[in-house]
Amino acid sequence: MKEVLLEAKGLTKHFDVSEGFFKRKKAVLRAVDGVDLTIYAGETLGIVGESGCGKSTLGQLLMRLLEPTRGTLSFAGSDFLALKGEALRQKRSDIQIIFQDPFSSLNPRMTVREIIGEPLKTHRLAKGNDLIKRVDELMDAVGLDRSYAKRYPHEFSGGQRQRIGIARAIALKPKLIICDEPVSALDVSIQAQILNLMVRLQKEFQLTFLFIAHGLPAVKHISDRMAVMYLGKVVELASKDALFAQPMHPYSEGLIQAVPIPDPTVRNDKKWVTLEGDLPSPVHPPSGCRFHPRCPYAQDKCTVQEPALTEKEPGHFVACHFPLEKTRKDLM
Image 1 (tube, rainbow, N blue to C red):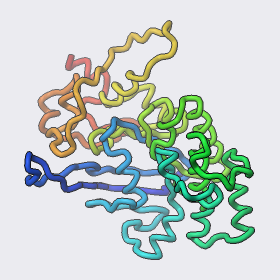
Image 2: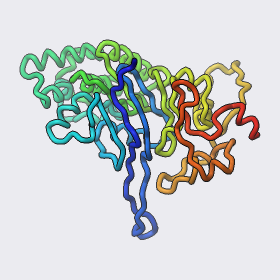
Image 3: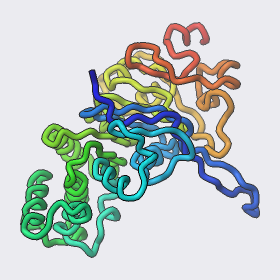
Image 4: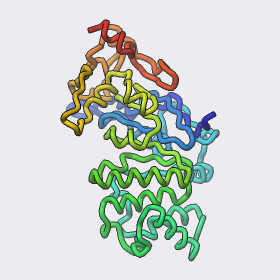
């Protein structure tokens, strides 16, 4: 049986915002709105969705960089939200993050050795020659020459900077690493190198990844399961093979079919789902199913009743009133 590492139930984050010409009217931005999520030890769970759907906010909630408005969060069998002070600081060593921008996430006034060694010093795990040795080992693990240890971030390429960020993230041997779009700022060839590095490090250090990204090919390459987010909610959750072979939510279909096919001789005879219109405002989300204004299969029921995330097939969850292809054909 799989070991549950992290479990979120009803996780919600609302922000108070001002709107109107004079900014006097108060409103609520529903960045994350009732997310249920389980991450198993040793797996990579990918999260995809359009910009503004709440992916990064969810990642920050899971490691308590943001405090949730409501909901529960357990990590390694304990109530993560109940921890305070020193207990929280100690537990945080088990959850690390790799940031999207490999330059702004590194202190420009610190050398590579200081950046990678900072978590070890903060948690009092190494000092002196032992610290230098640990940093050298981490640089070897991510493919950086030890002679670079005294250099500064501006002296490196984007891919090398991200390797520095990865070395810092694995320094404490965490149980979970949240990867917030770690390859989106890199060239395609460098993306492949970083993804392959992460796959290797996962096996070597027995890591668990939450991988947040826009690009479906990158998420498919590294993930075991995938969650699709739309306007603050998870609308589909399945293994990557099941999701790409038979997506049940129209939004998932649209995202997958939007990925360019590199071979022009390949013909796709499937009916295409076109994602028309823009992402609605999280301040004023649509009633019922939040995707219904853009959905080609939407019915009256979809405008008034919000679908729950339910298991339609073993391990395949979807929040849609008409998730099956044969049901949709009857609507067309």
